[in-house]
Image (cartoon, one colour):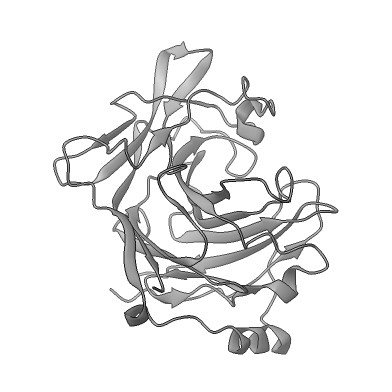
Length: 292
């Protein structure tokens, strides 16, 4: 497999609405990349993993967030993004297939479930997998179709710096179902207003799209830097303490992992008549490494 990197871009924005912009790599960004020192893979050891070998989802490692967000204390109806799905723990929304892989399935519900036309699953490692720094490898295959929004991401286990986004968010991989050759890596932070850095990775033909084959999504996170990779290739340049200033760098606390498939919302838009259901994100494994 030879995925070619077509776009290397970073984005820093001071918006109050979700937007994605790109800019060319500057000399300063190249110097930031040289400044970050990441441990070699051989220096790290496996500290947490799920190979999804068992017949059922391991509930000692994963729990489920249920609903549409409307009953949460922070009142995140549509999970804060105007999403359309209702998350369940039903076996038809999240299960282990015959290949020993996790399947998170989004499907249309007739009649609607709790007023929502779509169902899906959102699995979190909170309380059983919480880490500060390390390498995070997730091998997965994406669904396809307008309005699908799978993500592999991390949130702080304790909001030490305040409510979102002050305590940070690390999006290892986001994907829009109508752009099957593009994935996104993002960090969110900000005490004075919402800030984020977004980086893009595009697989060019004849390389397989993210829907056609499994790909490895990686985040390497140290005390001062966060780097995203796809199949071992860097996505842009590392995010660093200095590039997030003057806001406080919140990425010095424990974070947990989230695996989910959203339907609709601000970023992907809603499904169209051409979007077929069910659709699945399939995860082959999740592995976490740290320096001993």
